[in-house]
Image 1 (cartoon, rainbow, N blue to C red):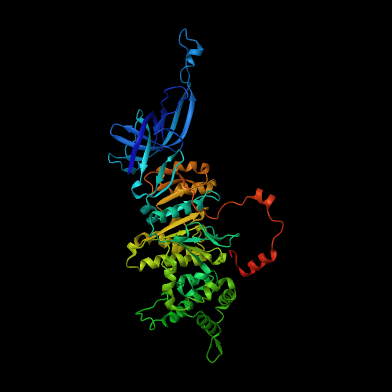
Image 2 (cartoon, rainbow, N blue to C red):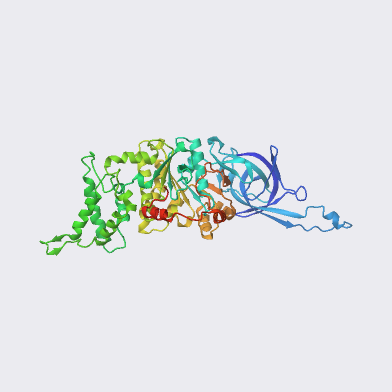
Amino acid sequence: MVEVIEETLIGYVTDVQSGSISASLVNDEPGSSPVITIGDEDVLVGQIGSYVLIKQEQTKSLAMVTRMTEQEKFIPLESGQRKEEALNDPLAIRTITLVPLGRINKEGQFSRGIGNFPTTGAEVIGAMFDRFQSKGYDVGYLPTNESQKVYFDPSSLFGRHFTILGQTGAGKSYTVANILQRAVATMPKAHIVLLDLHGEYSWVDKESEERKYAFDDNVVRYVDARKLEIPYWLMTYAELCDLLIDHSEREAANQTAFFRESLLNLRLLEKDSLSLDRVSVDTPVYFSLDELLNRIRNENSRRINDGKKQGPLFGQFDRFLIRLESKLNDVRYDFLLKPQVRNASNTLEGLLRDFVGLGDPKAPITIIDLSSVPFDVRPTVAAQIGRLAFEFNYWNPEYKEFPLLLLCEEAHAYIPRDSSAAFSGARKSMERIAKEGRKYGVGLGVVSQRPHELSETVLAQCGTFLCLRITNPADQSYVRNLVPEAERDLMDILAGLGRGECMAMGEAVPLPTRVQFHMPNPQPNSDDIDFHDKWINGPDDLDVEKIVDKWRRQERSE
């Protein structure tokens, strides 16, 4: 619903094209600007990013101002008129360029697209609007009028996927914190899983040595991805192949075939103890990685005909064994390959409770800290988390009553556009959520500073785009092609947005809106480092021994 609460005539249409409309502004006095008075405040209308109505007979079209120009007007002297007298007339013609957004019917419903374009002479009305107040989810205000709040529709925002795009320093973490803080304040039974790659939403304060959060303590639960122990046996066959098999090797086809057979046989050992009717190669039941390794070693060295002839897979797993043993000997992978707690099938229930915020204590936001996870294994871990979110609600009979949101920070790191085998498992898991998650109550939010490196499939399924400042021409062009055609000209303002300011488009807003987000409280740990201050007042020395020890132990945050 779009309700017009104030309006005033500001000009008339002078030129109409398929993608833009020009209008000449009305000048009552030299140098004057049209205003709307709201209470005791005069608000300028016709500013860049503001909205206007175009009225003609019974039709109302909505448009956004994208440009304002001023052209000197030629004033011929009348007979006997002095030049000073002529200068009392307005000296300039001001013109605004408008991007048509859609039409508003008699009931105040906004529809994208223009059915009947206005003709020249149509009235241009400066207006103020009210939107989506019924759900009470306000996230910011209009930069042109701080007293007017901007509301998002949370059902469309979280249920139909959204993306937050912007370059470093544009305010992505600021935006995420604000959106989630206000979500749990208005919807206390929310269920949100946040993938934190850099420890921006949970960190240890150096002075107090206490853990701090970008949220109130009573609404958040922190989980270190390594201590959460998402064990290897929960991985699907495809994910295990991504982790252990190099698909570029000549022997890869033989390796995957035998690996599949061995994996299935080991999972089948749990069938009777869990009273299962069937077990597949992807069933989430425990199997021994050591036993799998022994079977592969035996097959790799097996001989036939009383040892006179090499077996069909003799030597085929040499490189595979080297890779697997290398990972087993690397302490960074212990949380994945050597679980201490999640080492039996019956531990899955506790893991899922922790994962979706039903553990002790219960909390609407679960932060999964991936900052301590090795970079090369993050895609695999992210894929598992995404798949667990989807599988949880896919098999949940009450999925309509228990919607989940998976929010992916720095999503280009593990949901890449590149189709390389190293990332295929992670990409497919997230793409499945993007394509099918809405049906099972699993929403997806992706945050990235490099939109053209993100999976096209995931972005194409996003219903709402929150575009912060983007100055890179390649990223601007990519985002322009993602949004609806009628709104592409609005992308020209992206380079001029301030921190925490965005152009919001899509299903969560009734019309494209330039939004200044509220300052989150508490704020995330994402402020830029002040080089000037630290290079004047910074420490004279460091405990390099401690740095080396943390590096060796792979313990960054504690």
